[in-house]
Image 1 (cartoon, rainbow, N blue to C red):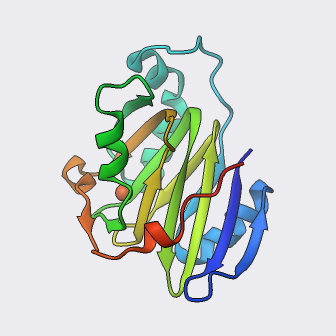
Image 2: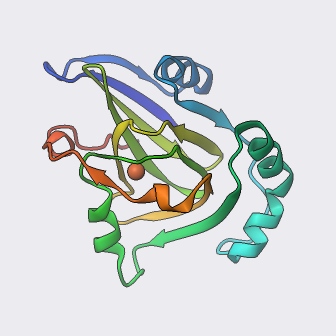
Amino acid sequence: MSRLVIHDATTQAVLLDTQDAAEIAEALSPIGVRFERWEVADLPAGADADTVLAAYRPRLDGFMGETGAGTADVIRLTADHPQADALRTKFLSEHRHTEDEVRFFHEGAGNFILHVDGKVYDAHCTRGDLISVPAETHHWFDAGAVPNVTALRIFTDTTGWTPHYTGTDMSERFPASVV
Ligand SMILES: [Fe+2]
């Protein structure tokens, strides 16, 4: 189940804890984050990337027409991935990108955790969630020690995906929530 927990970044006090998709979207909107629930395509588990992309093509085309994003691909991270630990570590420290980070969760789950204006927004995204993290927003991503996620990545410019680390210990102070 999708969940958003908002903490005060200084005191760590919980300011909001909700599993309601409409409330999640409403709470993320003021910081420019788009959160939507899309209908999940009915595909066999582990369907290949082209099949996943084709299944969402009408939604993707609509989204791209609206946002100007131009390309999409599919990333799959499971515990048996040979670089699972390295991939987890790469995005686990607070960082930013020069373009929006847009993900749609086709299978599995992961936490996007955003650090904005003295608050930490921990968004546990699950199957059917679309989240768009604006360029320059400080954030990190954690799929957990036993990752299981298949997600669409939607790009304006693929070079914008490079993480620029902020050098803080925020991700250690605010480990991802679990549901
Ligand atoms: Fe990122």
